[in-house]
Amino acid sequence: MKAFKDWKHSAERRPLVVYGARQVGKTWLMQEFGRTEFKNVLYLNFDKDARARQIFGEDIDAHYLISLLENNFEIKIDPKNTLLIFDEIQESQRAKDSLKYFNEEAPEYHIVAAGSFLGVATGKFPVGQVDKLTIYPMSFYEFLEAIGRKQLVSTLRELNSGMIKGLSGLAEKLLKIYFYVGGMPKAAKTYADTEDMHKVRKVQDDILDDYKGDFSKHIKGVDIPKVRMLWDSIPTHLAKEKKKFIYKEIKSGGRAAEFENAMDWLVNTGLVYKVMRTETAKIPLLTYQQRDIFKLFMLDIGLLCAHSKVDIKTFLQPDANIFDDFKGALTEQFVLQELKNLTTNPILYWANEKGHSEIDFVLQYNGEIVPIEAKSSENERAKSLKVYMDMEKPAHAVRTSLRNYGIKNNLYSIPLYMMGSFLDIVF
Image (cartoon, rainbow, N blue to C red):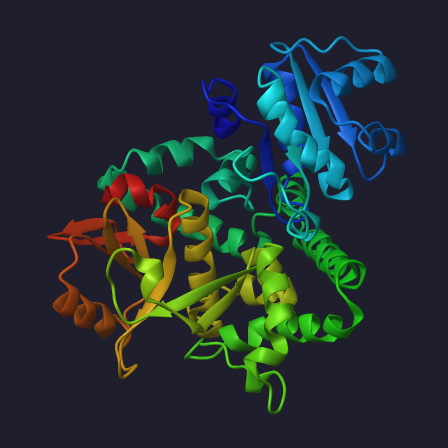
């Protein structure tokens, strides 16, 4: 919502295109923004409304379109007080093209457009004519606020180490719940309303089924089985000690060239995150990425649990340590999700030349490369961070785990449940 408000008051505002995978809350956010920040809202859904597609089917001169919209929908479109919402815009390339003319001929109008990555990624927007915003699943802090724990979020943000230590048990309990529920808004709302994990899982399974349905709807027939194989292999790869993605493990003799289109489709839809490896921790980080060596993560930790068939009993057993189970895959998934919510900056993972040492993530931020080791407890992998620090001499290094919050020299120990404060703590 803050990003929407900043866009509204920007002196160089252009039509805003909102990206995001299906069911991350794009439509609700746009409508709530309109309800709270404007006197009037004109909502067009190009998937459901044939009239909208027809209006944008011919002449897309900006002022002509405004006149057509006013007459067809019996509304006076005041540039300052009316928000125009173009939802499911992937269904109309002409509507996408019109954003160029709104920007050039009528920049005074407030226009936000959205569509799932599934459709938006396959069409083109006019280059340099739109602003962009990506919506991700809810972060842990957002989840806490949604279930009525705003005070806990405020306390964690204050970075009072004594107070945080006293709340660690509560925070860990709620983090365990978040690992299961995740950040898809409908799943989070179901938990907030019912606290019934079985109902939450039903919602997650429905979302996964919808995604599989989209595979058939949006992909060429020859690539559908390849996308499904890639999608279904993610939990298996993450469960390995070495999480590097290997094509031969999803199909005997499988090679990158065979799966290239399917992989690009999954990444471009926002359903998976592809984290490349680097052996060189220098700026600009992306120039040192090894594009053929990477890890794959899903867009949401709750969906990863559902896709992996992780049972609720696994979470509820008193001695269960889901932070270490699954070879730490859930912990890494969580940390990546939190980072994605905080910054659009490059995120890779690091390994030395021989591959004996590996850092879960390296982030380019504020003119430096920050190593981030994502663990819930001490283990052999902690040695990798020491190797990295001895080699690269980073200004800041982060170990996120369930250990207490603290700072020693340039090493920051951040509890997993405080990753939402990562930038405030380190920078």
